[in-house]
Image 1 (tube, rainbow, N blue to C red):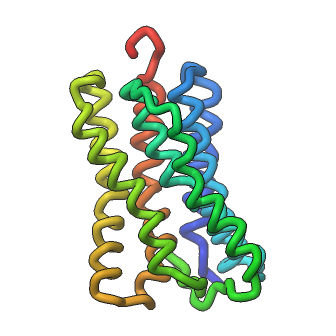
Image 2: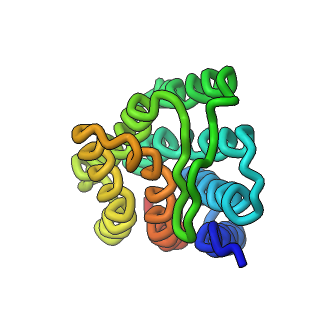
Length: 219
């Protein structure tokens, strides 16, 4: 029996349940709506990885869709922090330009995408310019965490702690990714996005707790 991708299927199912629960029980405000998108993107990626590794739907287009999905997570995280601290950054949606660029560029060279190795826990992908993609992928995550620390006084203390705990699940893989870029280990780098999304399962849970406690009257 093929168990490859089974962890992705489990995480996708739990993240889908988290999203449904938040849509039912959390307050519908601007911050929470961004959280819904983040958790939805995480769930879709895990589902796509299961299709690739578990069901064998490993076409270049399926792999490309997985990358398009996660490409919008880092800038969306940065927009989330800007919104939480009420930062007046009118051009914040320009942060999505790198993700949009890779979406178009990778579509033009679709045949170079492939899932080259699958395991129970993660997948390794072949895609061009992995170091450049990794740079634009990791930088917004680090910036959002640093900005969160800088603006901690603008956030309720309990909510700030919840956000810091959430970010710990994704900061460690990001720092590891930069170390791997420095050491020029492309083989391991090509698995980092998959591993990062596994760690992001804890991020999704912590964000869900934040969302349930995020009410407009408390902001």
